[in-house]
Length: 327
Image (tube, rainbow, N blue to C red; front, top):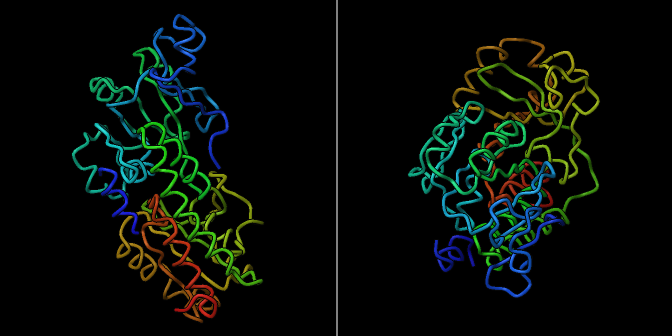
């Protein structure tokens, strides 16, 4: 049964410290302690208590009906699981899912408008740990809960997906589709041969080029497929997760594959390579270039595909291990 069909029927590694409380259940903590200031600043029965990805406790006193999503990487997953947002952030090179086009844009992910957010009277804001941790105090002043979540690895997608299922109130349906995705992913991983092809991820953005070292969804997928990232032993630059681009370092590392990650359109990325590198004899000497193993990866490797993450595992496995997976 396809995921799309499952969610049509629905109507549209987990947090160990999460707990789910309903006002209608006898084991509700809030019902037993309705005036407890330690568990609720609003003195109401709790709907959900959990720890987010920066280990901060988040208390929801009722099922959220007005959600603002500032983490653009999490937007797709939230909607796939049956959620709906009243507001969202945007990011250059990251397309907005069609189903989320009706949500109000509150600004770029790294430059959001707090005034816009508060004017929408949200009962939950979902942000990115890197960009939005500094909003916690201001939102708390307006009694708006903030949850900071990551989706830059497969485990993050599984864990955050389970949390979203609790927030939306579709836990059993969410468990089912996450399990279906995981079964497919594990089947792909189990077919990986005992080889470790070397690769480099080259990020192409308007700010320049870099070699990705850690902390991205694409690298996590490659790692689970037993690929060897040549940047692991290189010195990081100003950003700890990347290495400044260097043709000398690439020649020395001799990757078998060059995976191009474009923050923008693929056309922009191809033009950048053509203008800056193709006439350089050093670039042409790279094994991956000579053997035609320079690949522009689909945008979903940059923009988290949520429940479709298994398709990225399958894409990369077939690309690197054609004998095991077929072309």
